[in-house]
Image (cartoon, rainbow, N blue to C red; front, side):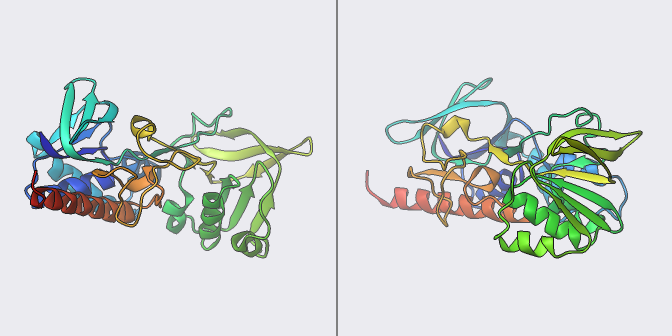
Length: 304
């Protein structure tokens, strides 16, 4: 019987694992993909030492040290989490069923993928899914942000601070009463193109042209970078029938990262407090592990 099972391989999971180790808990981390989004974030930034990504170095350190603790990590796929009488049962593909008094879900979220000609080809070659991560690398560049979500507005606003030109490509209609929408509409280097369809990405070795259609007319936009912010899909399937989620499937948590079931916690992008920032995810994971530890302390003090 474990004290804590952590499910996930991203920043929140790694931070939780180190907190649990510091408290000498009998804990294990089960991951399917190590590092979360860090790998492809670094690839898009490129190999230059000048391409600093906030939180990236810390995440690499956590991952490297985590892998050195073989007894505390399992490379496996979690199929389902269920609740037993006084514990949780975590069903895995390879190692079978593991039991624990507490479970921390840190499985992240996946971006909705742009599905047009050229999108797959230019992934990591000018096409990315987090404009806010790379805002500091966009000086003098022509940037397109695709989406009508709050993340699209934030990404376009950050990019506008450094980029020479920003195209905000909204498939639908933006809420022009939103403060960011109003601010973007007043920026001389921002062009908002609403109610349009993305048709294709073109270029030689990297993306160079974004083709969209508006009112039946194609528009060819010269770009250096394209960021997609169509939305996120939380990887919460393993507990979606067990705990409360919001309409999009993000696990509802309180300020202590507690879900609607005692002993079950969630942190990072899979939770309703996601921010898609590595440093914040690390903090979330540590706080969630601390809450799990407090839960275990209380449990031990209560007579059986």
